[in-house]
Amino acid sequence: MSHGKDPLPTDPVWGVLGVRQAGRLPERADVLVIGGGITGVSLLYWLRGRAHAVLVERHHLAAGASGRNAGFLLAGVAACYAEAVRRYGRDRARETWAFTAETHDLLAEALQGREVGYRRTGSQLLPASLEEAAELAASAELLREDGFEASWDGERLLNPRDGELDPVRAVSALAELAPTGSIREGVEVEALEASPGGVRVFAGQDECLAGTVVLATNAYTPLLLPEVGIAPVRAQMLATGPERRRLVDMPTYSDRGFRYWRQLPDGRLLAGGFRHHAPEEEVGYETVTTARVQGLLEGEVRRLGAQAPIANRWSGIMGFTETELPIVGPVAGRPGIWVCGGYSGHGMGFAFQCARLLANRLMGSARETQMGSSSSTTGSPQ
Ligand SMILES: Cc1cc2nc3c(=O)[nH]c(=O)nc-3n(C[C@H](O)[C@H](O)[C@H](O)COP(=O)(O)OP(=O)(O)OC[C@H]3O[C@@H](n4cnc5c(N)ncnc54)[C@H](O)[C@@H]3O)c2cc1C
Image 1 (cartoon, rainbow, N blue to C red):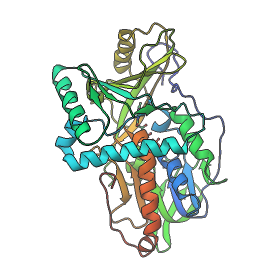
Image 2: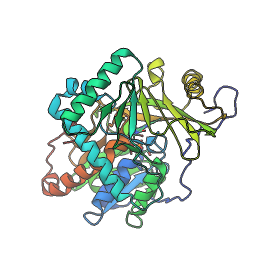
Image 3: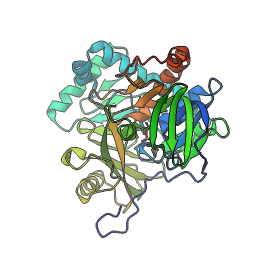
Image 4: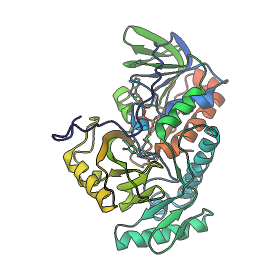
């Protein structure tokens, strides 16, 4: 995890939660959620009072991408709206933007009054080329036609309803709402097996019989179920120490989402991206930083006017699907096993409501699931 010769911290700027909830695999659960990121705690949130749900996490809450991201709450996917319309069709693009806009509202409501650094600052998309500028201008037009607030001022596309938060504190706040004893950290699931009564789950010496298992493991999902189409892609970030000047006042996305930055209220400037400069390296499960991408990120913060030394460098693993839309639903041919993930770099914007969708479907179709139906729905939030 070291970066060149510098003894720089490679931990995320958000830190880690001080409180641990160590536990063991339960012997039984109606719903066993695997993974303690934004998806896992959101599932507990939507299942509370409806099912005996237990979440197991191999390390600690927010150890994965949820504790390592930029904390942007953006509507939509990484592609701009014009590109999304071309890729998915107008209706699908509109539904996806509306879904994430609603996710933002629901999450803000659930976190209301909690110290999670949430602010509805708006966001800006800056073009890195004339071609991208034309795309963003067209996107603003299409967004407005479809009923979304957006504007193009010749230099940037503004999305006034976007926002930002501290992702670790957000995960922690949702976890605090979970029933006592429903979160078990330090439990690494090693295998899943279909059984007449549900799904048998194995972790070390322990075994659990779960009615349903939900994989909230995002990038790590194929390590348990190789047939699920989610690929691990690394993203790197850094943060400066506190800057005296305000350099940017809202989450900023540029170069088709391959570069992004924001400034915390205390002045620290965060920047991420540049994986397109090393696409062959920025894949897989190694949570390390590289001199190549970190050098580019450092150039970025200096270009933005930052003067403070770099204080944090880190990386995290995102889960990409072929369509870059999430997978939410039962896994074909695996009775009782469901997936909620594959946000393709936008899980903070998608996960809370994907979890709601899954919880509602699970509760609505409990009988069908018990009867061993393996009907599978994967693809976009639907
Ligand atoms: C650098 C970076 C910047 C990003 N910026 C943004 C952003 O600004 N906005 C945005 O919307 N998204 C962003 N993302 C993406 C976002 O972080 C993810 O989409 C989101 O956090 C996924 O959440 P998750 O809970 O599904 O997965 P994760 O947070 O990865 O959680 C999965 C958990 O499963 C656990 N696990 C895995 N296997 C097992 C097992 N066998 N047994 C038990 N536990 C297991 C892992 O330890 C992990 O804690 C970024 C990602 C990165 C890496």
